Length: 537
Length: 69
Ligand SMILES: Cc1cc2nc3c(=O)[nH]c(=O)nc-3n(C[C@H](O)[C@H](O)[C@H](O)COP(=O)(O)OP(=O)(O)OC[C@H]3O[C@@H](n4cnc5c(N)ncnc54)[C@H](O)[C@@H]3O)c2cc1C
Image (cartoon, rainbow over all chains, first blue to last red; front, side, top):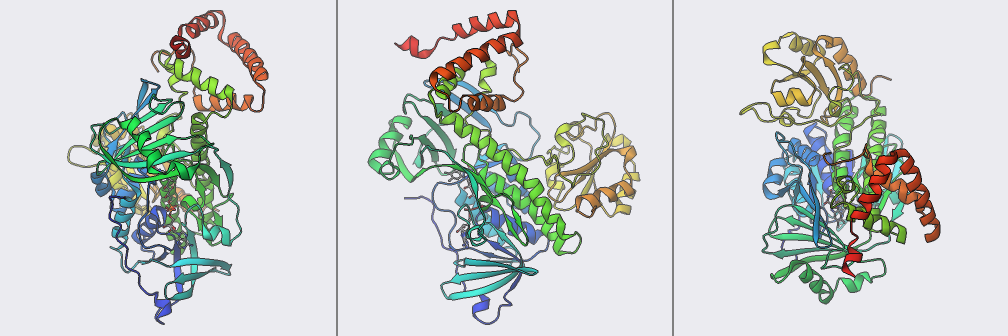
């Protein structure tokens, strides 16, 4: 039985059913999973009200996401719960790979210090949702969260969408200007619109088990190919809070998923892995994984985010983390459009930016899953060769694929990016379209990621001795909030060591444009702002 | 990366995926023949010294199967 105490959230009769509701919403979010909740909070921070409809009244049940990546944590930090998550979670950055009885190699996902957020934390999805729900509750005037409200039908109409909602007190209708479907991989909204969800199923079964035990395993990701305790298959061990460990065991396609869930089958498998120490099973499931995505995520006024739009196999932790970045990308665009500060066409760029991101996640997850499940004798032969060479040949270690862990997507080809006026090759990881690169701002001054906030920002980077007030004057003229960073780390990471540079950040903190300071002006800032908010035509 | 002895693979996952895709649908004999052609072409790309060294390095990596039997 799960150790986590599931407390149902209070159901309330919808105002539409007691005659007081308007039956209208600027934004209706279907699904209060991690993605829907993130979106609602982000919209609220932009002042945009939303109605969130969820068919259930508890947080995520069972063994689902545990690994939350640095970029998600930075987004959660902007929403106000990042520190709480890190405090509760198990921080890790080292992965160890084993083949049979030996360690082949280890990797460090964040070898450089000076970032506020760690490479990863492990935290059960139910805690993440619990904290998101609590945060959403801090916006009572903006977030109308309705439990046990199931969306049963969706009819796009002129200038909006008609939702049919089923509740314990009966059905009602809600007209929304925009609907964001965050209703998971079996999306009702997607089905109601008759949209496809193409992709591939991996013919393999995995036993996913959460066990509670006292153990001295370090906070690292341990992966085994063909371990002695689980012959011929693969295994993964991850530490979670509350003395819970996540164990993934590859079972093979020919196994019976129901039979494998029986305790008399599961217990010996776990014992073989963890030895004599006592443990209790918290949750067991058997999964077959898939990689799929919708062809487009924008369908008029109906938008798809998270698992409703794309699913991946979990090796790489790209599902939830990808969905959080969807919400991060969409919230500010919806807010600008609803405020009349950007044309509706800005929403199309959600497709332009998040489809390549989903493809990157699908590509990496598919390759990892394929490496784990050789589907011909030749694939098995090559994998064996890679694993055997890896002991002495460093190049072969990079061919071992037990999961390429989630990183933030760089929007390389986006039409929202403006000028890149730095010297070619300067700080390529911070070129327009890039996610923010965090840096410490100096003793006691915190981190850059804490300052970027949720609006357009101009950042001056340089030696404090070269600071002038020209930058601030140009920003004021362009109506831009101005920030400055002078720490050596910030200057190095943004290519401002030789001379000062100016960066324009979007509300999702991705880089919109950048210049050497001398080239920066209010006019150029305005041009970049026009482009980044989709007003460039 | 230190310890690398060749120009190296900038995109190891891309290479591996392309290699697996090339073998898809082949019989074991066809796969073995394809491998032979790939080895010869890679030897040409690597040059005498590296190709000969690769043979020695591959042989030196004792397959565990054999050691165990
Ligand atoms: C074994 C496993 C391990 C995983 N590990 C990781 C990991 O380590 N890291 C990671 O990032 N991701 C991981 N994932 C993926 C992650 O769980 C999902 O990507 C994530 O839950 C997607 O969030 P979501 O909000 O889009 O959808 P969901 O979490 O599925 O939420 C959808 C919500 O919509 C509601 N809903 C559905 N239909 C309706 C309707 N008709 N009306 C109203 N409400 C509705 C549901 O009740 C639910 O609350 C893992 C998944 C699995 C299965």
